[in-house]
Amino acid sequence: MKILLIDDNERISKMLSTFLRLNGHECIVASEGETGIDFIEGQKFDVILLDLAIPKFSGYDIIDALDKKGKLEEYKIIVFTASSISKEKLDDLVARGIKGYLLKPTDLDELLEKIKIVAEA
Image 1 (cartoon, rainbow, N blue to C red):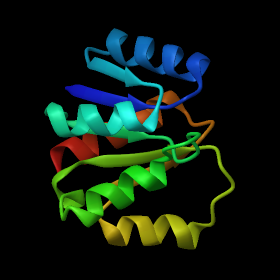
Image 2 (tube, one colour):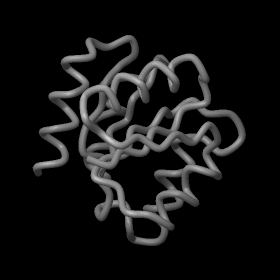
Image 3 (cartoon, rainbow, N blue to C red):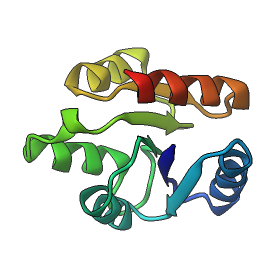
Image 4 (cartoon, helix red, strand yellow):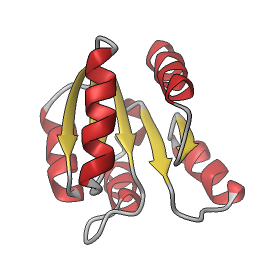
Protein backbone atom coordinates (compact mmCIF):
# COMPACT_ATOMS: atom_id res chain seq x y z
CA MET A 1 0.00 0.00 0.00
CA LYS A 2 1.03 3.58 -0.56
CA ILE A 3 0.76 5.53 2.68
CA LEU A 4 1.18 9.25 3.33
CA LEU A 5 2.34 10.10 6.85
CA ILE A 6 1.85 13.74 7.85
CA ASP A 7 3.57 14.41 11.17
CA ASP A 8 5.92 17.19 12.28
CA ASN A 9 7.78 14.99 14.81
CA GLU A 10 10.87 13.83 12.92
CA ARG A 11 11.62 10.98 15.31
CA ILE A 12 8.11 9.55 15.12
CA SER A 13 7.98 9.99 11.34
CA LYS A 14 11.28 8.20 10.85
CA MET A 15 10.30 5.33 13.14
CA LEU A 16 6.85 4.87 11.61
CA SER A 17 8.00 5.19 8.00
CA THR A 18 10.75 2.62 8.61
CA PHE A 19 8.29 0.28 10.32
CA LEU A 20 5.76 0.63 7.50
CA ARG A 21 8.41 0.02 4.82
CA LEU A 22 9.66 -3.07 6.67
CA ASN A 23 6.07 -4.31 6.56
CA GLY A 24 5.85 -3.97 2.79
CA HIS A 25 4.30 -0.52 2.43
CA GLU A 26 5.49 2.48 0.47
CA CYS A 27 5.56 5.46 2.83
CA ILE A 28 5.84 9.12 1.89
CA VAL A 29 6.45 11.58 4.75
CA ALA A 30 5.37 15.21 4.99
CA SER A 31 6.56 17.15 8.03
CA GLU A 32 4.37 20.19 7.37
CA GLY A 33 0.65 20.46 6.76
CA GLU A 34 1.01 22.52 3.59
CA THR A 35 3.35 19.92 2.10
CA GLY A 36 0.91 17.22 3.16
CA ILE A 37 -2.03 18.83 1.40
CA ASP A 38 0.11 19.22 -1.75
CA PHE A 39 0.89 15.49 -1.65
CA ILE A 40 -2.77 14.62 -1.05
CA GLU A 41 -3.91 16.67 -4.01
CA GLY A 42 -1.07 15.57 -6.28
CA GLN A 43 -0.80 11.82 -5.69
CA LYS A 44 -2.96 8.79 -4.96
CA PHE A 45 -2.58 7.18 -1.53
CA ASP A 46 -4.26 4.09 -0.12
CA VAL A 47 -4.19 5.55 3.40
CA ILE A 48 -3.22 8.87 4.97
CA LEU A 49 -1.95 8.96 8.57
CA LEU A 50 -2.55 12.49 9.84
CA ASP A 51 -1.31 14.09 13.04
CA LEU A 52 -3.68 16.83 14.20
CA ALA A 53 -1.14 18.89 16.15
CA ILE A 54 1.09 20.20 13.37
CA PRO A 55 2.27 23.83 13.70
CA LYS A 56 1.05 26.46 11.21
CA PHE A 57 -1.18 24.34 8.92
CA SER A 58 -2.52 21.67 11.27
CA GLY A 59 -4.26 18.37 10.67
CA TYR A 60 -7.52 20.17 11.42
CA ASP A 61 -6.67 22.71 8.70
CA ILE A 62 -6.05 19.86 6.23
CA ILE A 63 -9.38 18.26 7.12
CA ASP A 64 -11.19 21.61 6.81
CA ALA A 65 -9.54 22.37 3.44
CA LEU A 66 -10.53 18.99 2.00
CA ASP A 67 -14.03 19.29 3.47
CA LYS A 68 -14.55 22.77 1.95
CA LYS A 69 -13.65 21.34 -1.46
CA GLY A 70 -16.13 18.50 -0.91
CA LYS A 71 -13.30 15.97 -1.16
CA LEU A 72 -12.88 14.73 2.40
CA GLU A 73 -14.87 11.56 1.75
CA GLU A 74 -12.56 10.66 -1.15
CA TYR A 75 -9.59 10.06 1.14
CA LYS A 76 -8.92 7.27 3.62
CA ILE A 77 -7.60 9.35 6.51
CA ILE A 78 -6.63 7.94 9.88
CA VAL A 79 -6.09 10.64 12.48
CA PHE A 80 -3.00 9.71 14.47
CA THR A 81 -2.48 12.09 17.36
CA ALA A 82 -1.09 12.52 20.84
CA SER A 83 -3.03 15.67 21.50
CA SER A 84 -5.53 15.63 24.32
CA ILE A 85 -8.62 15.36 22.17
CA SER A 86 -11.96 14.19 23.45
CA LYS A 87 -13.71 11.10 22.15
CA GLU A 88 -16.58 13.36 21.09
CA LYS A 89 -14.24 15.46 18.92
CA LEU A 90 -12.77 12.31 17.35
CA ASP A 91 -16.27 10.97 16.72
CA ASP A 92 -17.16 14.30 15.09
CA LEU A 93 -14.18 13.96 12.75
CA VAL A 94 -15.34 10.45 11.84
CA ALA A 95 -18.83 11.80 11.16
CA ARG A 96 -17.26 14.37 8.81
CA GLY A 97 -15.47 11.65 6.81
CA ILE A 98 -12.33 10.58 8.64
CA LYS A 99 -12.06 6.80 8.41
CA GLY A 100 -10.56 6.18 11.85
CA TYR A 101 -8.24 7.33 14.57
CA LEU A 102 -5.45 6.13 16.81
CA LEU A 103 -3.97 7.82 19.84
CA LYS A 104 -0.20 8.06 20.29
CA PRO A 105 1.53 6.09 21.55
CA THR A 106 -0.11 3.11 19.90
CA ASP A 107 0.72 -0.50 19.44
CA LEU A 108 2.36 -0.93 16.03
CA ASP A 109 0.39 -4.11 15.32
CA GLU A 110 -2.78 -2.12 16.01
CA LEU A 111 -1.59 0.50 13.54
CA LEU A 112 -1.07 -2.13 10.83
CA GLU A 113 -4.49 -3.61 11.51
CA LYS A 114 -6.19 -0.18 11.34
CA ILE A 115 -4.42 0.61 8.06
CA LYS A 116 -5.57 -2.71 6.60
CA ILE A 117 -9.18 -2.20 7.71
CA VAL A 118 -9.34 1.37 6.39
CA ALA A 119 -7.65 0.53 3.07
CA GLU A 120 -10.07 -2.32 2.42
CA ALA A 121 -13.20 -0.32 3.32
